[in-house]
Image 1 (tube, rainbow, N blue to C red):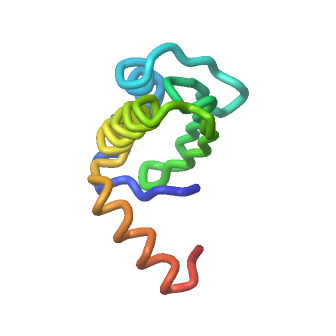
Image 2 (tube, helix red, strand yellow; image 1 turned 60 degrees about the horizontal axis):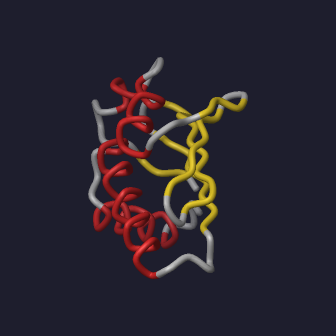
Length: 106
């Protein structure tokens, strides 16, 4: 799923920026082609790819049998990472997605 990056914020993710941020917020990562991959808590796999200074592609897969506590902790880490990566809060990201759906861009 593609997420917008706040204006001026994408520069920090270029080069090794995204990889370093993922390591800081989510733990050890591996590089698979042009994607940076990690797992944490109830998140079996998270793939991140910087498309441009204004767009980030994220694909996640979760363990549906994980405990509610693990799910909550994973959600918290994911939102902290996404806010640091995009510059937008979860609420702001949700509003931007809803706007794209209404405009037929998704």
